Amino acid sequence: SEKQEVSITFVKANGERIKAKGNVGDTILDIVVNNEIDLDGYGACEGTLTCSTCHLIFSKEVYDALPDKPTDEELDMLDLAYELTDTSRLGCQIVMTKKLDGIEVRVPSTINDARA
Ligand code: FES
Image (cartoon, rainbow, N blue to C red; front, top):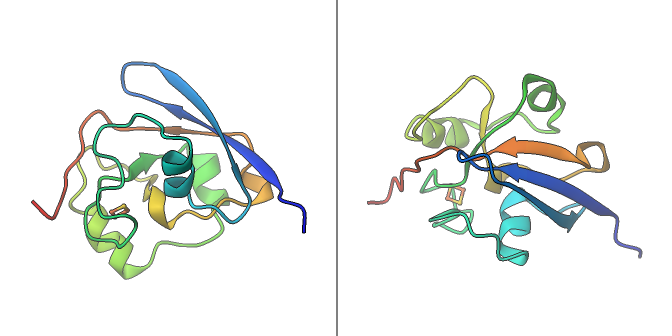
C-alpha cells in the first residue's frame, strides 16, 4: 500500500518555521519524533496522555477540521498546559489525515510537564 505523504509546518514562539513531512495515520507527535524536530521537551510522555508537553495551538479553521474531538482525558491534560487557548490540542492525539495536509500549528513558548 502506498503511503500518503502529508506536510505540516510548526511555528515556534520566536517565529521560526519548521516544515516537516509525515504520512496519513501519523500523529503530530510521530512527525516531531520521526523528523527529530528540535522542540524542547516536546512529547515527554511519548503519547500516553500524562504530560501536556505536546500542546499545540491551531487556527480556528484547522481546529474545527480536526477529525476527532478531544476525549475527557485529553481535556484534563490540556487544563495543565501553559498558554491554553480555545483552539489548543495535544499533538499526540491528533492523527494526520489527507485533509490536514499543509496545516500550520503554533508551538507555545513554554511547556508544562505535568508529571513533574
Ligand atoms: Fe504527553 Fe501528549 S506526549 S500528553
